[in-house]
Length: 167
Image 1 (cartoon, rainbow, N blue to C red):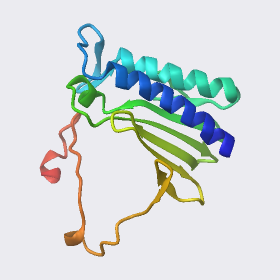
Image 2 (cartoon, rainbow, N blue to C red):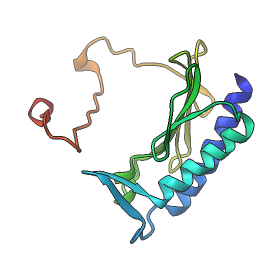
Image 3 (cartoon, rainbow, N blue to C red):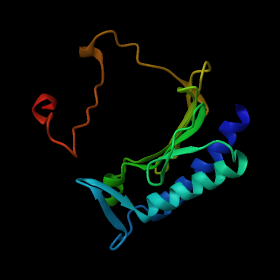
């Protein structure tokens, strides 16, 4: 598993470097609307290609379930890839984006990486070994009540059926 996370780390850092280089530049002609409020850019596609090529070179028999090229979930083991999470933020130059890679075995996640290329924060987790940020162990908050907690919320942006419940 250590070798797999090292290969995934290489892939995510390389993709993140591309994203960092292209963040904030003019994107005219590079943005496609896949569905209502669901976009893809040339950077999404290039990031995914970097990740899938890197992983496939090391693990040619493990299939991908990737956001832009789809693919298919493997029976037992498969990679799940979001090459640029927060594409809308990326398009608008809003600096909250990430790259995500996970490996599933028998429908259970066994490793995961989330990389924020703008802050250069790498979150990693291996099943049974906890999570880390830039190599340091992290844990959940000690807050015991909702009132003591920091709460973040997302709102539906494609289908507005539940907007009243969210608000």
